[in-house]
Image (cartoon, rainbow, N blue to C red; front, side):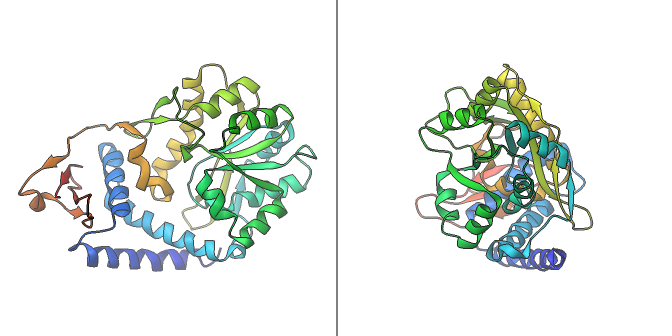
Amino acid sequence: MEDFHTLYTLHREQVREELFRDKTDGIQLGFFYALMNIVKELSPLQPETSPESVWMDYLAFLRTVDEHKKSPYSFMDWDEVEGIEHLQATLQEGGALLTWHYGFVRHNMITIGQEIRAGHMKSGLPFYLVAEQGTVEQEQKLSSWNTLRQFAGADLLNAEDEMIGIRLYSHLRKGGSFNLFVDGQTGFNADNRAVELPFLSSRIRTRSGIFRILAKTRKPVCPYFMTLTEDFRSKIVFLPPFILEGDIQESAGRVYEPFRHQLLKQPALWRFWDRHHQQVIHWKEDEPTLHSAEAESQVDWFSKPLEGFGQLGLNTASGMIYNLG
């Protein structure tokens, strides 16, 4: 990806220019939510880089990655692969590759597919890519990406299918492997036994089903993430696999721990900042949404007004949210 640095720099300049141009009339609600979540999550930690700057880098990174979505063959291999032996061990035993919507998420199957074709997975079994229903339907329409997945030996599996738990359990017992995005937060029906975990400065609620399945089958779990080095080289990192125990709270925390460390290092690479508030059950410094006739004088950014919804404002120094509608 020799052109990534150039594209990213271009998009960062475009994003900053567009945001400040649109600031007067209000920004898209999704952009506003992303900034709100970044400010409320990072500000209590007093990071060296301002949350506002992280937010703009986040939007620029998304735009750059989306450019590669249009052309799958523009990214054919990782510049750096770390922990390949951990991937191989997990595929050979049969287990779960757990990751997050972080970095170059579309290209996770490059290295995994290479190892499957090299014979590191039990023959006769598919490798499942577990995704929410909307993603499965969208991906099936992208012929080039489907071709790449088929070449890698991967099948899409709907996380919202009513039999998803049984299918994954059976697949693991047969020695199969699958990939799942832990931050996807989708599954069949509501999760009545959700797990509460520390995030960066907040506490979140996450679905527990996958952790229960993995603890019951005692199959290896290999967390991994896709990132970018300081000199803009693409990198995928596979961590040592481990077995989840019966304490689901502790197991979920163990899975999330390496992601929290990585997110602190490069927060702009997480795709789900715009929906993070849906998971949060307690911010570090919870503040009520305020209604004020003079609120506009206290906000740095506000959302574009929407009929039936209104308008929100944010003070980036305090993390205070104002209802302007």
